[in-house]
Amino acid sequence: MNKIPAISVVMPVYNAEKYLKQSIESILNQTFADFELVMINDGSTDGSLKILESFAKLDSRCSVYSQENKGISETINNGIRLSRAEIICIMDNDDVSMPLRLEKQFQYLNDYPECVALGTNALLIDPDGLPINTWVYEQTHDEIDSSNLSGASGSRICHPSVALRKSAVLAVGGYRPEFQLTMDYDLFLRLAEVGKLANLPDVLFKYRQHLGSAGHEKRDQQLMETLKVLNETYTRRALIKNFSELQQQVNDYVPLNHRAQHLKWGWWALSEKNYQTSIKYALKATFQKPLNLEGLKLLACVVRSFVIKR
Image: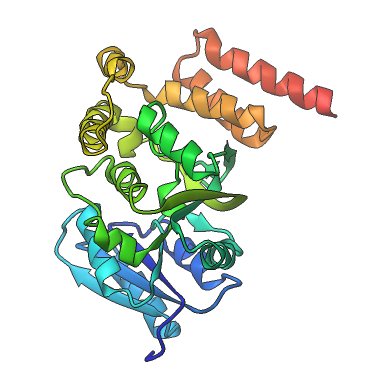
């Protein structure tokens, strides 16, 4: 363990026992083996710590640190400070990294030293691991930063798939805890001022979606934070401010209920012919509101598309 690894993978963990084993195994089974896995237990009250400790006993690349609950921003900051490598890969405790993720990110960052944050395209999966659809991100620095500055669609780097340069993250002050719902978005805007951002075109990550996630349940707060982040960024970069479109989104925001989210996932899954997933959510939406035609319409479209395919 005295040798400095090429990559430090930082995994913040809080009450994640349901998916934690699969997430850790997806890192340990990477084709690129020269890494350490820094796992930070953020005051979990379930069986997460036992799972972390069991992996640390089995694989010397794993280390476990425990702390009182501090929230995800400070937990990742602590993980970065404890890491020994210059390249830091973020890993959520419920997602899945595909086998080539670390290998491809390490190679790219070696080839392009000006890059300070490198994400990948991602496959959205549902809570049970079924495929929903592919999330495609812009690839070049100018495309990513321009889209981030627009505030139209959130961060244009899939945060839990990102590889970061530790020196750059520390230089801009790390993750800021005042932006709990937009911490990655805020970080990428600041990193774009000291280096280049990029996304690999490869789908190297499975990004799990949850109905109870902040992106679903606290979307209005997330939009408000986005406005604050943009206001700071435009001031810092001496840009002309015009957030009327985003402000209108905040004003018009109506939270999605579970049925509406099921329908959205169903249509997304159908768009990529993930029939099992689309049927699952068409049926859920129909059972939740049998007299409403939207679920039945989705179900009919799934069946029609499946029959035509055959």
